[in-house]
Image 1 (spheres, rainbow, N blue to C red):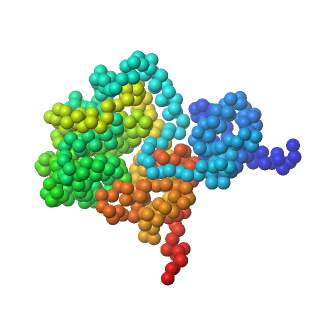
Image 2 (image 1 turned 90 degrees about the vertical axis):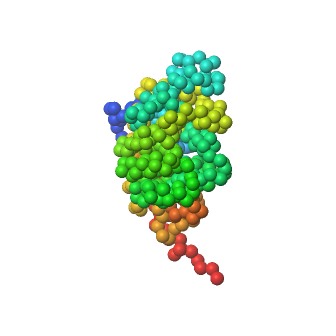
Length: 468
């Protein structure tokens, strides 16, 4: 072999390290080596990784292990393989690379150990083993739902404590629950109160139903009780929506003291609260839900599994207000859908009862923490977030507005959500939400964050030409 070619092959393999004794499956460790080397810069977009046989010999493993490792790396978007040419690191300059990174959707990251597909496969296998396919092929039925609800009661009990959970229901996602609650408790023209920046699904549902959305002023602790009372008196609203734990999009978490004030205010005003709580299980330090402070009175409590486990579950638990028989809620849910998928409900129940759900939350927490740490290391600007949260809220420097910034990011292959997507008012602040779970892996997230950081430092006012 010519010296130059041998030197090239040696350089290609500089990222290889010994296997860890308890680092998991070796093919996963190889894929992790590639990801970490891309993140550190040891491997660059367009670099060729060693041929499979060469790497197998270098690492002392069989060819099948490396084949699985490269397949895993391709699935993560780390490399692309071309027949007759080999495998190359993905990126803007890689052959056939798909450089676009979508950070608009607020989804949990895949566990770094690549266990999600295996967990889903094993879980569904167990569901099919325990239940007849005929039972899973019908629309939602009472026995199957009742069993899943019992599992949900066990899942929610640590958060909801002594609340009576006998009225708990399950539905196909919190968006369906929000729409059902709004449609069953309001009429066109009624007002709904919420934070100035709030969940887009609420805005969509309210506007679809012809409701008036009224923003209530807040401060660093969240919605202000005095502003809530004033807004209620001026609007006549009977319904309040809050996402007090790791707010989407601002990442604020309302402290316990403010929650107690809000609870007292809504009980005094006889307001009904929709407490949307999808991120609680990702945060170890979340205060008690407002529902526990109202004793369940005047409060719908929503707990989605899409943000803490897996979006494809499309499952949310809903606890109606105390002394509410839930008939209006169920009628609204029936009008919106024919219930949950029996197969997915079976998977949810199995994961909760077997402890898989708890273990999966812990894995997602670890990956979320790693991604938040990566963001802190790469972004020099002030952000609002939580160490294990799924997103960060990035107020823009004075020389950027959100429209120009999101457009400029789109031009370099990165998508984020602008503040106008969450704003009740037509005039939104200049900020963006960056969803860290949207990237396929930490390597692509690092690439996206570097592009964001570079753009933040660029002043388009100085670079633009004057037109007369």
